[in-house]
Amino acid sequence: MTGDKILEVQYHGNTVGFLAETSDRMIAFQYNENWLSNGFSISPLSLPLNNTVFVPPEKCRERFGGLFGVFADSLPDSWGALLLDRHLEKLGIKSGDISALDRLAYVGKFGMGALEYFPSKETDFQIDSAGLNYDQISKECEKILSSQTSDQLDVLYRLGGSSGGTRPKILLSENNKEWIVKFPSGRDPVNSGKTEYDYSLCAKSCGIIMTETELVKSVVCDGYFKTERFDRKNGLKLFSITFAGLLEADFRAPACDYETFMKLISMLTRDNAQDKEQMYRIMCFNVLTHNRDDHTKNFSFLYTEDAGWRLAPAYDITYSDTYWGEQTTSVCGKGRDITDNDLITVGVNAGIPKTKCVDILGEIHDKTRILII
Image (cartoon, rainbow, N blue to C red; front, side, top):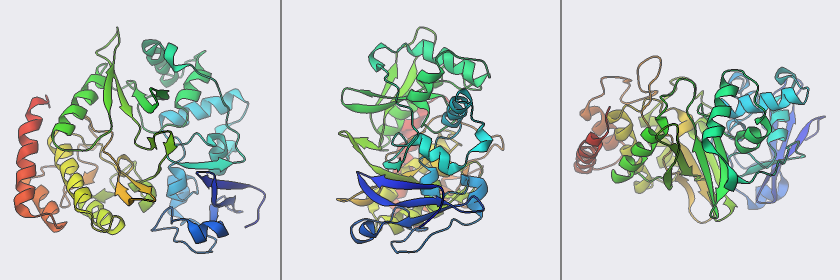
């Protein structure tokens, strides 16, 4: 692959392949020869293991800036993208003057998931997380969201500039674990952190697998939601891809249904029964607890050499609404007025015995009553 702008893509120090910008600003990809012999497909639906120069479909131009979805997963969105734009502005660079390939270079080795990009333009700030004042960080986040100037921009960018999602957040290391701490966005209730923490405890009681969660103390609210990252384990970066990245789907709008999710799990995990049951539990929980922001970027797969493809632990489970007033991911073609029978139908069609579907749904009905919805 040749071109003026080329990035090398690495995973655990091994070269996966190369990205290059085409004349029409699409970002082509080609696997490295050694990776073809020893690696795995990093996006099975779009990037099978062969020596082709892959060019993204046209839909990826608007959705992912001309990138394949798996690489767009490495880029920050919403809050993180805002911080990156502010950082670039500080450097005298207009956000509209750089391509998605340039943005990957600024992410470098600090992106979500396990892929790293070289040569990088990342800025490495040294931040001591032990001395962080979370209430002060929340206040500085408010300034950024309201287009005010913050003298803590460098700190916020280093701690949260690679993150995704709408809510302001920081990424940090504590006690040999990697964590995410979330803060309210401008339209969130001040106690959104406590709500998400309560939801995480309830979800776990319903048999939904999540990483460790905590509630960070605050003097101005009931606390900030803190969760262990599922893409980090024992200091190692785990390869992950969101459903949006895998399907090249637009996560900003309704684009999928839980039936498709079940088929995707069946295909990638070789019909793993535990993962299909997990998705069934998550679907039921989301519908019953008014978590309507269940878009394709809020579900992910993990890949490891030992286990292959598996459904990632659940995340971003909390009370949420959409401006159209429906589930973002539909159930039996419905975004609202979803019945127990609709939920059971999805589970049965995925191969889960009907008696188990009924039992699980009943359990989740009982255990979610503690949430004020």
